Image (tube, rainbow, N blue to C red; front, side, top):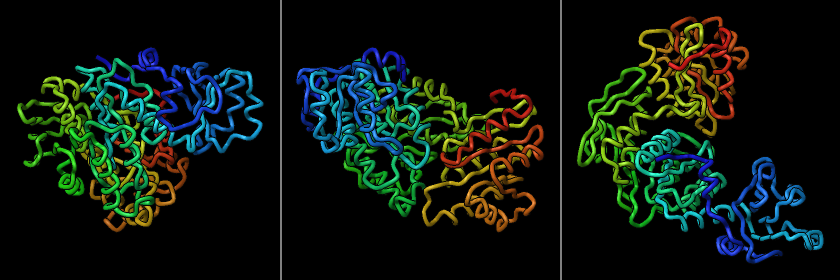
Length: 486
């Protein structure tokens, strides 16, 4: 079986009729053939196919309505637009061109409604995953594991909001048995809307931590926002919840659907990890399922990865997979780009690329993994700002500095508006001022290259917009660009 085979998805994707689109969006047919049909939907005016419907979305940087003339001149025969955006001369300009135009109040909401329509009319089971950390890793583990038996569609990249989720659902076709979807959020009500769109059979909440505080205000608010997922799980569905997180166990007590708890050495969890062994580059444990046990060797570092694996294992168990298939799927998993990727440059320096994103919980977990990986060798943390932390940003960055020192990290190379806060925390914990280096990415790179030597371990991390992966590339290219995976 397979998953994320986009070429096959495109070949088998179910078509859209004008009647389906009108029904899904409560839109009106402004002009064109009411019996028309489209092979698919697209929001990208640059890549749309001639037989697809163009949905004019207003995004962060561009408004699709500005490109209507471009797509219609290029031969696109269908558009979905906001009714109030059409001027009085629209009908005259497009008369006789065979253009199908559907009008709605809000195209972004209509896109979600179309995604929900496709979900309801596809014979597929849905897994939806949210949480402060581990969403993408859990998604990849789950999709890979389910593909041991089923045909699986999964979210790609960061398509986890009210635009990305429908775009994933549009790829559903008659071949798929399961879809594994990632749900992100940064404000209250967002998970509610995403849940309305995908209506999961299984909903997973990985953890609750201090992320997106700028839009939510407190960890308690984060927990409530993540808990919105529970309200939209199918009535006969299951919530898979982390028993090691007290914020989530409180959600379990309020869940309107059945729950399946997972945890590390937690007697209340139906899916557990026991006899955990940290082998540096790998984590081994005994996976305890309700009816059988199996030994698992994860090919990734970090104890926190076990929690992600348990969430995936819970989904596998609920889907009916035997322990042997769950084990096989988990052991095939390899880290997603930018998430604890281990590489070594030609000078023998070990680079840990965890640059995809950062918040206090994930940064702490990465530092703990680094402590295990380095095995007595020198280590350094290269850190950019952790964003969207609101009024707690300064305190949370200071705490990271303190944790870095307690984890035995020898050097801090810091960049961003909160570099001084991280440095202050490290100083308070006992780190020598000479071990704390701050500046632009270019400045800290130069000092890092002068300091590091063969055998060192360098962890690079920061929020997405800090683009810390550019430093990873520079470190890997040091020594004529010859690198190898560890």
